[in-house]
Length: 64
Image 1 (cartoon, rainbow, N blue to C red):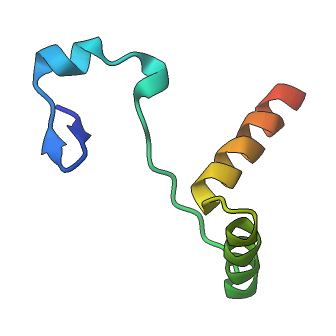
Image 2: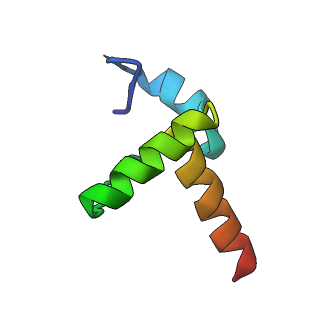
């Protein structure tokens, strides 16, 4: 059973979700200075670290 916005989805709701709507969590271990700079740079652009990371991962996949 999947969770979405702090509640569990019913099986019927889960089936309606398309693959592109499903979100997985990724944990990264970064040096503290890199994390700080990444967070600050994303914030200056009005973006979240997750948004930037997702964009970078998509670009990485497309290059392969």
